[in-house]
Every structure is written in C-alpha cells, then in structure tokens.
Image 1: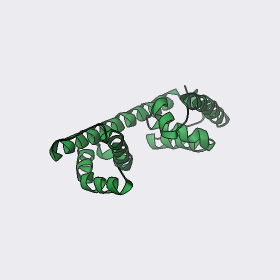
Image 2: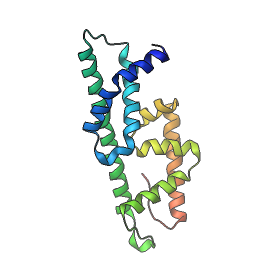
Image 3: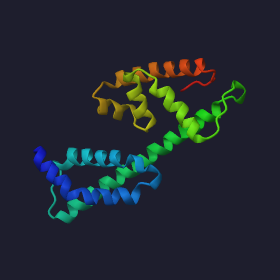
Image 4: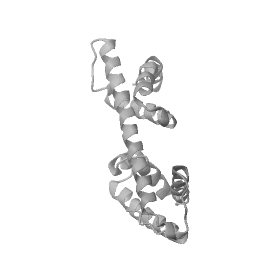
Length: 173
C-alpha cells in the first residue's frame, strides 16, 4: 500500500476509528486520543495485508474493534500509571520534609524527576510510565530488549539518586 493509498484509507475510515475512541476512551483520558488513534492505525496497517474482506461492513467492524481495543489498552495503561503514582506517594515518609498536597503535586514530582533524566533514559521512562511493556518499548524505539532493560536499570538508579538529593526516601523498583 502506497502512502497516498493509506492516506485515502485513513480519510475513509477515520470516522469509524474516532467513533470507537469516543465510546471507549474515558473523558479523563482526552489527552491520549492522538496516541490511541495512531496506535490503532499502526495495528491496522500491520495487519491489513493479512486480511481480506468480502464486504466493506466486515472491514469496518474489524477497524472499529481494533480502535476499541486500543482505547481499552490505553485505559489500562493509565490505570497502571495511576497505581504507580499512588505507590510512590504511599512510600513517602512525612518526616522527610516533603509535603504532598495533591495528586497533581505527586505527578509533578515524578514528571520533574523523569524530565531531568538524560534523553535516552527519559524516553524509555516516559513510555514505561504510560504503561508500555519492555517489549513494546523495544519495538517502538527499534532497540534490543536488553538495551531497554539496561536503560530502565540505570534510569532507576538516577531517579533514586535524584530523589535522595531532594531529601525524599524512596526506592523506585
């Protein structure tokens, strides 16, 4: 499929994809719509040549199902991210002098620490926090899984050191 053909295909099917995303992606995840749509089209593109549809309706159902599943995956990733933040906050010792007023502040602390990492670690951790597995990160960044594991290990060391320098006792596992 050429780029022009795929562009036309996206124009023809974007209503179907957006309909599934609107229905299955919770409103609090509106910031992830672009990611869900992109992941849906990547999955569609990878599998389009493997399937043959007798009728456009069956193709549209297939596309809708993929978009639905990607929306549900994003919700799951978001839920895991939220649990990680809650675990982080629960591990903070109030005697450390760090008072966390709200979830927003907790998220800002984590984002600040991650954003301060060198780029090769930061990118891996941003994907990890979004809920991607090591294998998915490896595929997304076109790196070996061992490289991803190494960057996660080294990134955790840097995160722990940064938190320690800020007076926060927390071991990122």
